[in-house]
Amino acid sequence: MGHSDQALSDDFIPVTRCFVAFELDEPSRAYLAGYVVPVHAALKTRQRWPMRLVRPENWHLTVLFFEELSAAEREEVWKFIEPTATRGGWGELAFDWRGLALWPNPRRPSLVALEAEPYALAQSWPIAPLLNRPPFSQGETRHFSPFRPHITVMRFDPRWRKTIAEDWAAVTQDLEPIDSSRLRFVELSLVLSTLTPEESVYVRERRVRLG
Image (cartoon, rainbow, N blue to C red; front, top):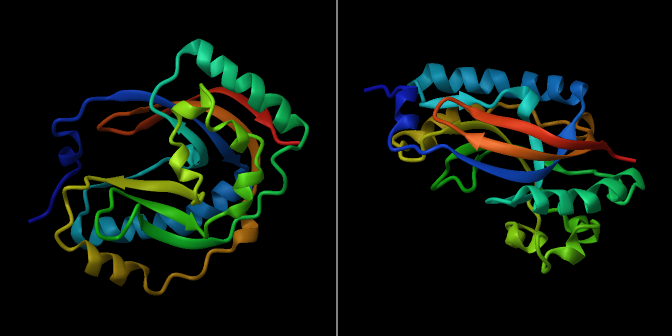
């Protein structure tokens, strides 16, 4: 029997969190949409997966995720992030993208992400030496050892896995390799995130061009 998106709302309490993220430019979003949207459509058609597409304008690469930060703490984070970005302190961002994957692992996934090879150069980012100091230490710092780049492109109810392995294999087996050179990150942002049963709502509280 098919499942509907209503399953996503069962016992769901919306929460607002925040994170620092790299932002894609528009040509990158357009390229990635051409790769992702047909997969989403195929999964929905095959088994009516209880899945929703994250809107392309909200695709991003999370640098550091926080459960919650006060306005003063967010200001402190941004006072460090902004000048390092304008000075070019984050270096050339060249990720080796593998392709779409069930995330965080294929046995117990809750979303679909574009994932890349672990990125050792994250240890040289300006934020890395501060991860043991507040407010940066309030983030999910364990993801820096190693840093695993991923861009969330779809979400679904993690309780629903009845035919996930065979459906995923059937839909993705003939996918062309992703062209990593087509994905460029041009900004850093501080984002407020509210996950609701209907969608993820992102508000860019601050953003700065990467130098």
